[in-house]
Image (cartoon, rainbow, N blue to C red; front, side, top):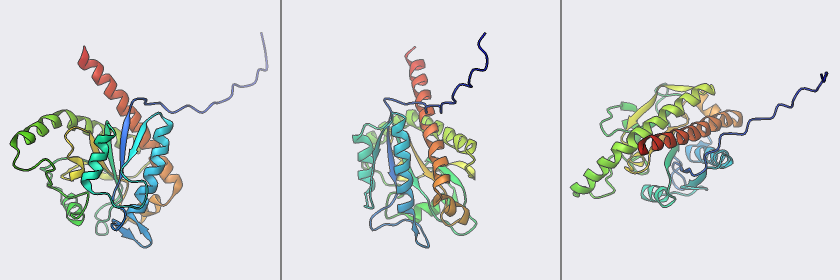
Length: 251
């Protein structure tokens, strides 16, 4: 028998791939709208940096990524949603890092569409951003078109559970990576960017720049790398689940 063989090299595991998946990343704000501010830091700049890092990680996994903006420009809500549809995206992730009065919010939070939400903090955010892409209650299809509304509601019966499944997977992956989560990490809100009836959508608050710990995390490349890995893992895991679900529906 052969003896004293060298230990096999420990090769880093290749990340799970997700070919065929197209994701739209939507870094909030930009241009004349900096979003929330804390000292010299702006929400618009922080979420753009994160989106670019996440794009690179997703593309390394075989994901096609569309960005609603890739520089410091303002993009209207309608154009953000049009970009997601035009790219044939299977998933829309809107990225934010908001501010609320001191002590009201800390940790990562994932929002899914819920027009009946009575959450006070979510309502505060919607009001604070009513001039842009968090405007609640805008009906992009025309308010008087009852048929369009019925079709949208019907489509949402398929997409809403898929959005919620992604939100749950996302928070579990963040927890595994040691990311601090809000006390209620998955919440419902009437943010218009979540209203798309045909594309599963979430709004990810990476943290709140009104919280000192969250702000320090958002400006720390090591923390962002962990968060990027968590989101990328959740995305590829969700896509595998989508394929399994589609296979079950075919049989």
